[in-house]
Image (cartoon, rainbow, N blue to C red; front, side, top):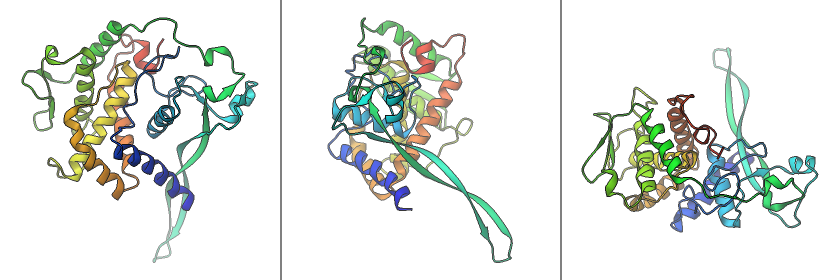
Length: 306
């Protein structure tokens, strides 16, 4: 049990340390200039994006070690490609869920089975820690990214959800009781990406409705634990969505007040961040599931530049 607990504790402690420094690990500086795309999720060796808690952990590792490349692989994968890990390189742990079935005998003598879920871990290395890989793993971007096309893709993406999005006023919000998203007018934002990043946050809230994912953390009011948990889901969900849509996520100043609440939640429950990330990933997957395959651009589907 100690090994299983250590994964939850290690990851939660790392995120708590970032938050205590005022850094939100799901909002990494988007300065990567790699052929896979300036704004992307961490990628496996085969180009598939990581999801869930591993996204946060690999972003954090790339930020702390100043990696520009978003691609990660195991020691074995590097060896199979004829490459070697650079001496002194520190690998980054990632995790996946596994389970085993436990048989229990009740007081009545009847046997029942239940699944026990736990985390298993393995280590990956960024391609900048590996020598001798094929050149495309290191390739820098050779042309500027098309900002206009990415924002057009975001318009299509949010439009295809069918959400009731209204514009007006000075507050961005989602109303669960009336089931609509309210956004300030586009021209009131400092730039286009700030508008879409804010919309991504509110659209993550939108998925909580009982007719969709039916997500609830009990009675919620501003400043309480339930409110903080839902805001954490929306914050991480927005970061994932922005990444998938090629939009630079911007920290909202009005959310700085949540840092203390998030820290309290994470310190009291070592699995809280795992639940928040799982809910956020589920919300993002739900929004992707509402897209038309014929109209959705490849960058939106795969989370990487075509």
